Length: 444
Image 1 (tube, rainbow, N blue to C red):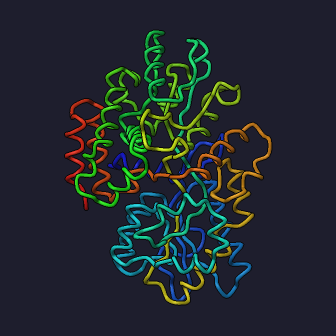
Image 2 (cartoon, rainbow, N blue to C red):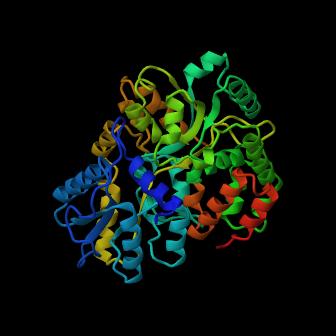
Image 3 (cartoon, helix red, strand yellow):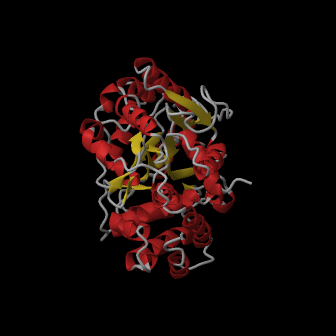
């Protein structure tokens, strides 16, 4: 059975590349090119994830590079998300990994680095400063371990966003909240009107996590989670951490979330349906749900009923309102076990073939925001331009872009986090009990 974490990562892998107005669909495991093994000789190989339009954009980029560089061709193979995760563990263990490895960065990349399985790319970026300058600076945090860069940020960005049903706000005469106190006040307004304040697919657990990610940032600043990520003793028990945990339980106790939220799944899009059908007024979710709401929500998006913003401020908090959380980028690492020629060819692809004008335009055409500085000039003035510009500004201008915790932490700590979040939102554990349980995972 796929765990909620795995299900979310499958969803994210596809959703990051999902076009506006096109539903997500996974393809088979057959690769468009070489067999699914290592590099096969001295040449470079690349694995990537399936799901259109991303799969087509990725394979087109490789084919264009191969045509322009016949002496440095990359072989390629594509995999569904869960199949890739099983395959890459086996391949790395057998020293048969592809030269170029997809990664979510964060905790998984840290494990690769710890086991000397991926190449240090710091000098590559020093030699290719133009490429580094081309990409959002906020994307490099999840690619960096102990001050060194081990993966190339690429493709698209997916911050977490507050969504609002404007019609419901107008109906109750309320303003969209910009502070936590205003949000708590409007919860009472909507409850009094018999409307669920906030849609939440709590059974999926990672959706609950997004509330904590923002509260930790707004209250303690990015340094709070950094201390946790770095494994500092009792980091989860810091006063700012307890304050954030307490505030989210205050919201639960106030009836902020729709009744029965713990039985609602995000992967079925049931939480989104509550928002666009007028049964809930607000939702905190990834930028990837914009496309599915546009597809499934009738005229909710196209009719001007949707509003969106960043997360509210918290009085007395240390976090910058411009900070965001979510998925800063896609990432590719390079196997440290590859041959010298394969590494040279892979670096050439990183420098010349991975992020091009063609790929930037293709990602935008699919309804996504590339992590390319200045790509907003390509957004045009269509019906999605306001949304694309909002996401672009949120991601490109963020002083801190905190990676989703279940990707930033080790797999062991991430699963413990989701288990304890379920208890926290279910009010079966206190903030102090949550913190103690998570402190016990430090260093795992």
